[in-house]
Amino acid sequence: MESILILTHVDDSGASLAKSSLEAVTAGMNLAARLGAQLSIGVVGADALSAAGALAQTGARLLAVSGEPFAQARYASDAAACEALCRAAQATIVIAPGSARFTRVAAGVAFRLGGFIDTHITAIGGTENVEASRWFYRQRLEALISRDARPWFLLLDPGTNPAFEAAPGSANPSSVDVEQIAVELPAPRTTVTGVRSPVQSAQTIRPDAKLLFVAGAGWTKKQPDGQVHTTEAASLILDFLTASGASLGSSKSLVDQTGENQQVLPFLTHMNQIGQTGATPRHRKGLSTCCHGEEPHVVGWRFITERRAISLDPNCGWTRGKADVVYIADAFQVMAELNGLLNSGQG
Amino acid sequence: MPNALHIVVCAGIVPDPLQTLEPVSGPSGPALKNEMALPAVLDPWAASALYEAANLAAKNPGSKLWLVSLAPKAKLQQVMMTIAQKASFELVAVDGPSSGFTDAHATAAVLAETIAALPGLDRERLLLFGGWESATRGAGVTLQLVGERLGITDQFQGVDQIELRDDGSFEVLERIEGGRHQVSVCAGTPAVLGWATGSLAEPRNNPQIGMANMRGILPALQKAKPAQLVANGLSYLSVSLPKAVRTTRVEKDMSPKTIAGELFAWLREE
Picture 1 (cartoon, each protein chain N blue to C red):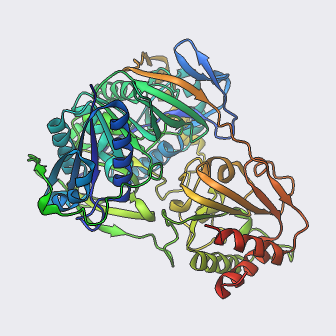
Picture 2 (cartoon, each protein chain N blue to C red):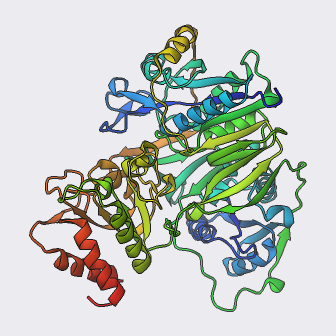
């Protein structure tokens, strides 16, 4: 019989589970129910015991590695913590969120346990055997995989499962039985000194936003009057992001202009880039503007459910079959009108 | 030379992103149709790692830079014709598959064994570089596994910047959720850095660097050892192209105001 461990970690507060961890809890509980497997949940964090309180209703064996050394997301301490949790649970299947914190360490932990890992899992299926879906070649090919070897680590892409929610009033840490696991740490060589936001006038990357707004290189090209209107483009885009709460993605060609001494949108960095060498974010809706290539329409919004595009090119082959609606129009004019509606709150 | 570094960059090759990919069943599992005929490029994030490594090596006299690549050597030779002109390095080639369907653990074992055997490598001064993910498998685990096999427990992923200090310590910026960077300070080498985009533009081709590199690259390709990759229990139940093709409504004659009204209503839908 399989023994499943769900590895989780706390969020920035240090005392609550990160959303991606709660998504992994949902996936792990579903798999354990299907397989009739034993279920354990491990929590890593400064105050992991408090965070584990939210998991009382899962009925799982709860394990925690808690303490100040685990307040920082750092390879040496996180790998030691996860290794200790895995050894305590004696898991054959380990499910963990594909967060930055666990993506950094999970493969190393799998190696220490003599196990194997597959990442970017989008779905876990199977009733007798475990089957996992993931994408290859930057979201171009989808595969269903399985492994005989154990322990098998599966890192779930964030946004692929609903977050586990305990019933109201259930989180009472003092009444929850959580086993605290001791960890022997090596002398620390790395210190996390803080978190830095990119140098830009506004926070434009919002993973939890409903809408992904994609800006293409057309925003900085010559307009019908023969002039470039980068300042106006920047203003329109930032106004829209503020009014709509959307997250901003960009095509590679647009962010690359930063290094080519062209007029650029000042708030864009490579962190905004989607596509082949960028992110493949998950949002319910996507609106692409002034994009004329494959990356934003095929790779970059593979996981966008509803897609619309504004383009001047009625023959753009990349939007056909990829977007639900394509508006052949000047994005400058449309976005100015749309910002007006959003700011007045009227349609 | 207190900061003379030994930098090893692990970099694979990938099909040119503009190529259409189609899965087929091969004798040893899934493969790409006409895989050997597809034009290849150096893996984009690994290329960032290479450019950052070359920059770091140039700033720290006495440093040495190796490029370790596991790939079919005929394809690797094609890619080197371009890459060799961009940065000075010593190529260490291993002749084996570069397919995304191979197992990362097997790839890591081969790379770690190759790096451990590099003549003249001082592992106390080692910075192990690579892309944080490949454009083939995209697992983001190979570099970690190589690091673990080499006993390196200071690892950073999604790196966009490294700043080396006079005392040998360095500050690293790693990408985390929400478009932010985590800032860490590491006491010094050895360390593993899986690079995201970094901050350097792709260097222009420099034929002089290319000529100098090629003197070492061709012999390295000739003596590339063959590598067999084991599956480690990994099996593919199916590999397919995404099926969903959408019916696209193309609106050619709507005014900007009408489009804005429609988009506004769409954004308001729950």
